[in-house]
Amino acid sequence: MSEISGFDYQSSWAGNCAQRALIHSLLLLGIPISESDAHQKTGVSKYKALLQGTSLSSLKKAILRCGCIPYLFESRNASDIRKHIDEFLKRGLPIIVNAVEGTHWGVLASKRSYDYYYWIDSDDTRLYGCHHWVKIRDWIENDGGYLVVGIRPKDDKKFDHSIVKNFGTVYSYFDDDDLAEYWGYYLDDLVNLFDSPSNRKLGLSAEVFFDKYGERIVENLYWQHGSVEKMRIGYELLNYLKVASVHNLSVSIAEEDNALIGITAAMAYAIL
Image 1: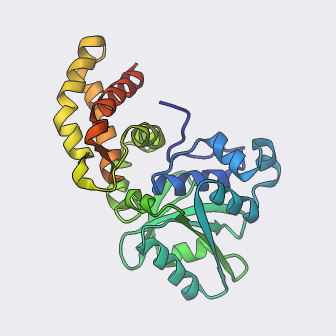
Image 2 (image 1 turned 90 degrees about the horizontal axis):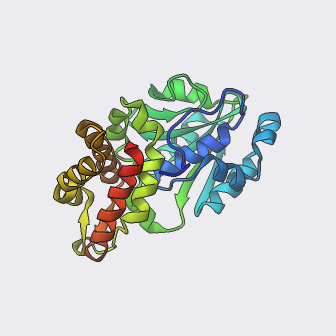
């Protein structure tokens, strides 16, 4: 595993809510980056973020540098801003919101129902949750106005790997805090090993791949690292499967062996 970030809190002293919002929104699209990457892409050092925060223009530049397009929506009409939010979430695209009277950046990850929205907030003790629109509206209101940024990948293929539409499933996985925190680590390993061919007939879905090779991976790792319990190895395997499945990842038949070797090596690193 690398230093890639998952769904996690900002440091209490860091002031890097914008970088965390960038990380979280990109994870929703299946694009893992590290905290260092987020600071570099915004052009705002950790020290500067602590003193001054991160401006809208810096955040928009970072989104572009990460291979996505920012769509800025501003309005003094709550119904109008909600319409833009709903349109993006319906398409499987996350929304970064300017919140807490313009002093904070957070993320709207999905809708649970007509009136309820999933949110991710790196400065909230719960980190993620689901609130009625009225509470969301009050959270993002600033002096009677609203400002949100929709994020769309430049590469249309990335749409296939968004978890916005099925975030309800992901949210249920977050009962495991460790899985949420290390989500980016698992995803980074997977996107580097699962090439997700455009023609699905030429590849294996994550479910088929792990069903085919899961037992072999566990047995090989247990044989190599007998001091590690099988339950621990199985836990890591299940986490890779969960992340790969919800992101709709697959591996081409030509890369099947390389994926098997790579996942086994990644899991060996994870369990030690």
